[in-house]
Structures are given as structure tokens and as C-alpha cells.
Amino acid sequence: MLDIDAIRSDPQRVREALRAKGAGDPSLVDTLLEVDEERRATITELQETQARQNDLSSEIGALKREGKDEEAQARIEETSRLKEKIQELEDRVDDVKARQRDLLLKIPNVPHPSVPVGASEEDNEVEDTIGEKPAFDFEPAPHWELADTHDLVDFERGAKVTGSGFPFYTGRGARLQRALLNFFLDRARDRGYKEMQPPKFINPESAEGTGQLPDKDDLMYRIPRDDFFPIPTGEVPMTNFHRDEILDVDDLPLKYCAYSPCWRREAGSYGADVRGLNRLHEFDKVELVQIVHPDDSYRALDALLDDAESALDALGLPYRRLLMCTGDMGFTQAKKYDLEVWSAGQEKWLEVSSVSTFEAFQARRMQIRYRPEPEARTRLVHTLNGSGLAFPRVLAALLENNQTADGRIRLPDPLREYAGFDWIE
RNA sequence: GGAGGGGUGACCGAGUGGUCGAAGGUGCUCGCCUGGAAAGCGAGUGUGCCGUUCUACGGUACCGAGGGUUCGAAUCCCUCCCCCUCCGCCA
Image (cartoon, rainbow, N blue to C red):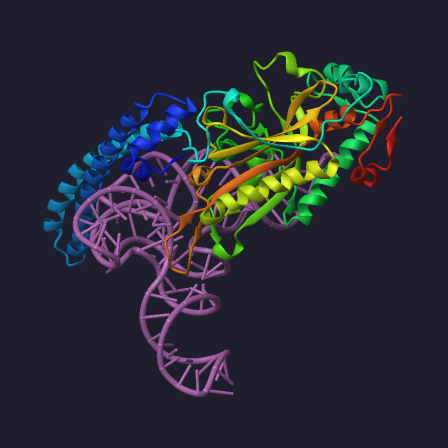
């Protein structure tokens, strides 16, 4: 959510953001400004009426104490009339506030000036490609074949027990998942992130806080009986951890990491890229979250990016870094990078991490603030997050890139101790 | 799930219908005191919104959330949420 005062003082900037993100009709801004005008006028009228009523009420109290009941009675009659007016004005204020909020929730975050303008993923910038794609003197197999050969993942039984996109990891496949979990969490902790175990269900307030609601409603599963959502990413509980809090400026930046499963409905995404581990309804991830002073926001973004990339470096996986363009970056982000790992068996890039800053967009919805110095006015923090990393596609790339001509798979050195084995054979 | 107790400012805690945004204390900020510090003394110290103005002031709302009674609600009534204790159930 953007700051209404900022929109009022520079509406053109917001119209341009709407256009650049392809996120709606720029005239939305003008509608919003009209509603804002109405809201402020109505509030002023309400408050003036309330002030009059408060004056009368304290006069009534004073008169009654002095025993001047007749004079008090005249004022009581006047306040009775004011009461109706106040009720009506309160209703109007509630209504206009709700309308303004609905409009504000439809307005996306404004992209940072460094973000390339573009309409779709075609316009994302490949900033860098790191590492060498492995060369093979044979035809490398896709990971679903390797997983099948070595009994690492059981898609069919997962589909039977739950549904498509809910695989079992079996034997060394399961151990490898556990190895990734510990490997990623230990790395994050070494880089200064506090380890957390968040709840895996969230309530609607939390979902709105980080921006999953109302605009990405169909992304999540839902438990209607108890009004919970299974988390689509650890970002949601982790960032909402400090919702409605005023933080101590000396505690910033707050850096948290957590492992969690993630559930996504992926409605309407059935296509060519759903085979094997490429796109699942349930997957595991280590998530990194930072809550920072606004001045440190973009330094933190670079650092967070480095945290995610270093994990790929350590695993020896070739990857590329994409700076997302305005049209492909999402509603809530101000700037976003994707990291894509090379998958040799499929000969394509797979997204394993998304690293973003939201500036104050999420913080405003969540009311996460800090006090710059004692007795100063509170200000909103900036929030950031990044995957570090998502397991299934990392696993896919590990299997495909490290396969040998005789059908074995070599584990990268840092993972061997965690997994407890060096080769899958 | 059953029974009981409770949710007040950064924290503790008082407040059962009007002068209460809320006593007192702790913490914090500034000043005095001191060679320096502690103690002590004095002053200040919630959040949001609206308005004026240009940064202080005025107004308004907020005592778990929502609704009601009343001229007037932290205080009375109703619904819900959360926490604690005991019982039950349970990994």
C-alpha cells in the first residue's frame, strides 16, 4: 500500500507506475484523489460536530453538579439532535474510508528508477551469468528420469495419496532434502540471520500484510472452517512477525531465516514446465527476511542477493541473475531479482530464488515502524526477502548437472557431509 | 471441549458513569548537582487521523475487537478474539 499523502503530492509518479507495471487504469489515481478529498472533508465535519457535543456534555456535567437541572436539560436536548448527525457522519466516514482503502489496495508499488521498463519476461535484463554450464559427451537425462532410476522421488504415489504436485521424496532423495535444509540454514545463520520456525498457517490479516490478499487470493490454499491459509512462502509469517509493532532503531536491521514448506495452488499454470520437480503444489524452501532502516534498503537488497547467490556458488551450480522489468516484477515489489539455475538435462534455466525489496509498501500495510530517535515521530521500516533457496529445482539441477556417463550422480563437496554420502549410484 | 480468572501507554500497575489519554512507579530524553559516576532534584516523554501553520499548536478518535445503553463509557450490557489456572482429550 502506498502513502496517500505521497500520492496526493505526486500523482503522476503513481500513474506512471500503474502504466509501467501494466497493473491497471491510471485513472484509478484520479478516482482515489476524489475519494480522498471526500474523506477528509467528511472527517472534518464529523470532528467539528463531535467537538460541539463534547463541549455540551462537559457543560451538562458541570450544571448537574451545581444543581441547575433546567439549564442542563436544554443542552441534553441539543446533544440528542447532534447524536443523529454524528451517527450519520460516522457511517459516511466509515464508508468513504473503506472505498479509499479498496482503491489503495489496487495500486501497486512504484518501481525503483533503476528498474527497466518492460511489458513481460522478455524485457527482463540478464545482468550476469555465473559459472560454466557442464559439458557432456552423452545426452544428459532430465531429473525425473534420474530420480526414477535411483528411487529418489515418487511422483505417482504422491499423486495417489494427495494429488499431482505433491511428491514423496524417498531414500537418498529424502536425505538430500534434509541435507539441503541444514546446509542452507547453517549458511544463513553464519551470515547473520536469526533462525526461526514459523507457523505454517496464517490468518487473513497476515496474508493482507505481505500482499497475498486481496490481489493474489487464488495463489493460496484455504482452510475455510478456521479461516486459515497454508503459507505460500515463509515470507508471510516471518514478515508479519513484527506486524503492528514499533521497533527499537538499534535493533535494525532484523535478519531472519527459516525453513518452511510452501503450498501453492498454481491454478491455470499447467503447461510444458510442470514435469518432475519443476512446479509443485508443495515444496520446501529456506527463506531470508530483512527488516531494515529505509536508508539501508538498497544496500540490504545487494547483500541479500549475495547471500542467495553464494549458496549457488557453494554448490557449484551455474546460474544467471535477472533484473526483473516493471511488467514482470509483481504488485508489491519496488525492485526484484530472480536467480535461475541451469538445468542440463532439460537445457533450460529454472528459477530458484527471487530477491526483492518492498520499500515501505508491506510495512505500511503491517504498520511496522521504528522511532529514529527518542521522542521523534515514528517512521515505517523497509522490508525485503529472498529465497535462499527453493529445494526442488536446486535438487533437479544438482541431479542433472552432476550426472556421469555411467548413470551415477556426484554430490558437490559441501553437501557430502550433510547428506552422509558422496555419490548416488 | 468444560469451569474459573484476566486483557489499560515501551514496561509494571491504579482507575465501576462526567473535570480520564488515563494516578503512581519503572524505563527513556534533557537540565541541575559531581573531578567523573551513582544516588538525589526538576522538566519532558503514547499512536493514528483532520485542520491550521509551517512545525508548534488546535481538534478528534483510540484503555483486546466489534456492537449496544446513555446527554456523556476505560468504567454498565451483548457478541467475538486472545492470555493464564484447573479438569478432560491428545503428538
